[in-house]
Image (cartoon, rainbow, N blue to C red; front, side, top):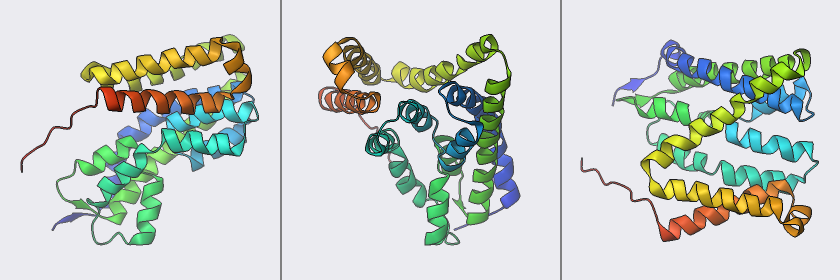
Length: 238
């Protein structure tokens, strides 16, 4: 079967993702320094963890001196979807991508990169995938550094206003699924209710770390809705 394996083509296809990532990670950089992280720490987090939701959940845990177990479980719950996407993407990878390259590509497998690669008519080769991954990583990391530096330099009134963008990112992630599926909307609503309970009930707020609160709310709401109102998967005939 024909294989798309042009590094230049990968760079070109990844450029729009790079631009989008820069704006989102700029807000993350501000968010990180506002929570006490240094510019270098924010840079290293973005360079080694290509997950917006995971990074945003990790910063408060790091800032509050949470445990490594708390941090690891939080990331496992939030980023478990990438395991499923990697399994699916593996069926699209061409023969030029051996096992070591598959591990490298899995590191850079984000939602948008996965979507672009899967949209191709033919299998994709290693040069194409490395090009597709490179530009988003650069955009994500540079955006974080720029935001972190701006957070250290700009007045607090400006950085506070720019920090609102991080909540806009959350809205952009959540709104499309809940518009399509009632179950998703109910799951979000239940998670919000549980989060409020953990925040406003003193015995829970004082005894359960914030990181574990995220884990508990996510797992409980997802499990309940998966049992009560599972989302039906449409079967497509080839």
